[in-house]
Length: 290
Image (tube, rainbow, N blue to C red; front, side, top):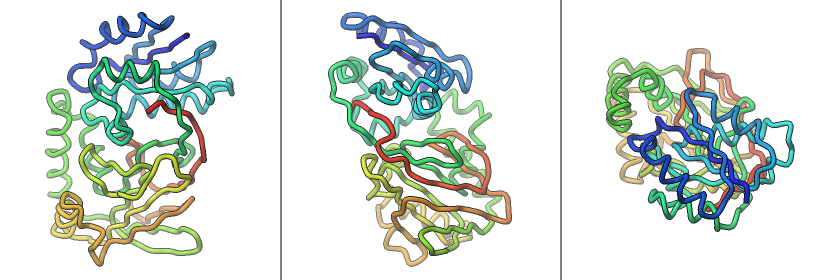
């Protein structure tokens, strides 16, 4: 078996130290070629250029795997879309790994990557860029933007998000967001488009979303004030947010999201840009081992 391993040594707090162990385990059963990223975009380019490979393993966080997926799907080598993809979760949160119940123990993750059965999954796509877990528009995306260049993340990614979230909350004055889907229209101030149920590792903003199904689940929060967003956050933590009168939840195959103001977007935990955004779903886009 020819295996390509794409590693982000900066993921989480242990990725760099894990490389030798992952390689040692893989070499027991496979012919291995390792690609180590140095900057954002490397995983995308490595995956895009692969050939003659039987399995692609992404060792890193959600952002690394997101780049690998997009690299594979943008490649001129159409066979790549049939190659099974696997995860060795090394990131801070590992949202997709938790969704798919891939162990964070390296030996178990490697064993699954080599011997597990691949399953076809459907992916979300926002402005042409694929995502496996979710896209966030509004408060959480602005929080991610605040983390992007924050040195706190090097100490603790979760702490960095908490600090950034409080900073965003302190100046919170969101722009109105318009959502159009299936002939309907509604408005709100925070939108989560979920391809999977898990959010942030331990929460479920779109609890009915499934990566195998050709839909996205959308949660729209209509509250505008600081008090509202705090109520929404605590509602998510208690798994009661879908009971709120100012929360809309629906399933669709496509939607358009716009705003007259500047509204930020994050995709699979990485900052993506600003609205407008067009979202659709690609059925059975890739195969993932889980």
